[in-house]
Length: 138
Image 1 (cartoon, rainbow, N blue to C red):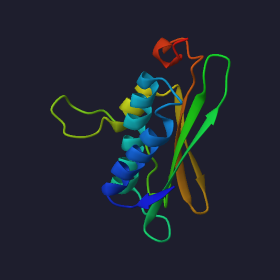
Image 2: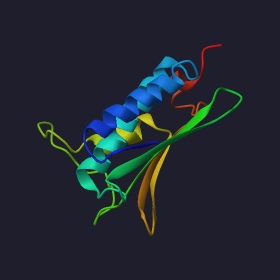
Image 3: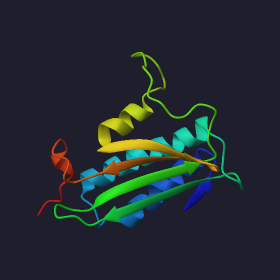
């Protein structure tokens, strides 16, 4: 889906993701997906240029697995001078924690760049032994 390169883009993406995956993934995983997607879209709007047309592209993909679906989120924007990086935030800072949230909730995350911009992705794997809450209740 495409959303505006505007703060409302994060809200639109969160709602669509929740609507489409509510009956597909466990509630704890859905909450993590929504939180991470909001961070990634918010970062794209705050720190990167839009894609042509003033938009950000948002995608998710589910892959079936023996312990439940793995999910990849991907947010593509027009890129920025400096790529996304985690930074130290003081306890009273009002920002600077977004990628720490992504790293804490996702199994892994990263950045890919091409001639059009950059994509930040995050994967959620139910086989992640550090995240037993991602496994669907059976």
